[in-house]
Image (cartoon, rainbow, N blue to C red; front, side, top):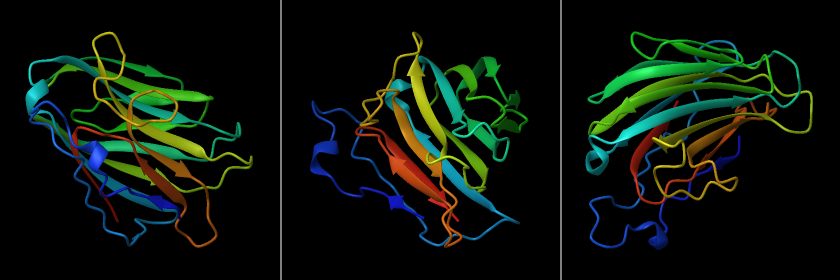
Length: 195
């Protein structure tokens, strides 16, 4: 597993007296399989200064090899905001509440987009299978918070500019820890646990 978690970077401090502070990440470095080739991640995001804002949650799963061999399940979704419409694409199905949402890598781009009015917090659990890709690129899952025009709502360092708060590469490492996690948020308070 490649674990990329920049835990302290001064440039992440929000400027202008904003409530939003530096990214707060907590990670349990051990990996405990939930069954054969599975990993669980728990994510929370505090959004009190965006409460009342129209937004969209983007759960994106990109297949790198054309082989249907990985699934992402989003479950235990909680928010004090108000969910509105959802739009599944490719191998996406389900609902956040009561859940689950399932993304299977049946097409190149598989996505579940959920519009909502933000409250002060949201959270969910992600279950990932860990089958290695047959290509040189891994299958990738990313989570983004978008504004009403589907542009990134928060400032992130996502290298492709999609505004991802985190991304997971399922790389099938022989060590049994078959993913890497990259964190991109500069100004939101978020927590991601993996075990």
